[in-house]
Length: 517
Image 1 (cartoon, helix red, strand yellow):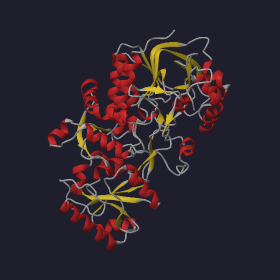
Image 2: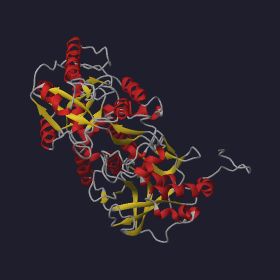
Image 3: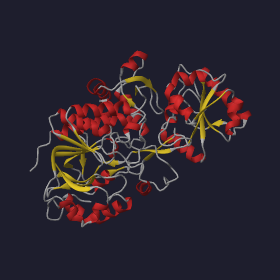
Image 4: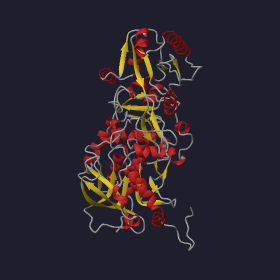
């Protein structure tokens, strides 16, 4: 579509939306969460409220890693900041995240003598993303990963205590919070923001973004007292943003209708690791004022979740700590079927192709060396992780044919001894030991929807771009509400990294916007 009209004037967002607004509104109605947009298309974007109920310099949507990082940096830059969240408590999806962040050159790598570089992280992220990543965005993450960790620890006060490995990385470079949970970063971020004077409004849902005649974002229509998921609940109010709005509102993994629009295969049979509010309305609201979206059909399945527990659970921390330390087995054949240290998409696709649950297991020596004690205890308490004294007992419990299973275990042990896997090229770590005697710990695996790679198009300054390829003034975004950073597949532990990096950029730049009106 040309950006110029026959009269030589630029095609504005308003002109574009006059011609495409009906289709955009229909998409919102299908998603079932943007009922406010069923009014006349042009009026939905051009009508300014008669009265603003509140005014703030910067308004941030979302209280996860990205939103809180943005709020802190905006406040640090001198802005008066309000953060809203439609849920009753802070944290969003970030608070139930695994608490692991990729960081190049961290102190744990140095202690272990691991050689790493931003260039290697960049290469790994591009490889995982099938080179669909927007290069300038990935480069920002890779180059600022060390700085991001320093900021989290030294300025925010979060504690990272351990170096861990995730499939798809060339080396161990990810650091884990002291409680192996995203809450280990979210809670310090929230406390820091409050201490700095950032204001918060919960049970407050953004209905739509308000723009002026020039297409600048000037505020938003909200519902105060919103009770998720009742879209009719709460009282309508208008918030003015003197400088800018930042969207740190997360993805849409829990919106089954919306994700099926982009990938019809991912229907209600597939649960999600995400919190219930991960439904994507804020991303759609931005699209409806002319923001461009990208890669919405790239939806990541987590291959490390268990059908024996709900949500994210304990098994992801059990499984990911054991890749390279224990085999994944097809219980119908007793054989390995995939590279355990491969990326998430490769493993999830292999499981979905089989069409039934698989298992991962290891012995007590490897498990207790790699898996946190409280993860093991909680997983065993809820029944998702189980313990067997012998291989025979394990095989009987999961209906695994014993003879081929024993043959496969013998091969695995020989590969561990040689530190090389000729079958699937699994990364075997120096400290991995053969599985020679029980007890053995095991968990069943089945994929869940974990991350939506697509979202709003941003530039390296975290500005949201419109269909005229120019930044929409007054609108920034970071985290899972954006697309382009991760390409086809997000490399594990790079979500927290991208949220912190671009959240900080968005907050600082939003605070430096020239006030309007």
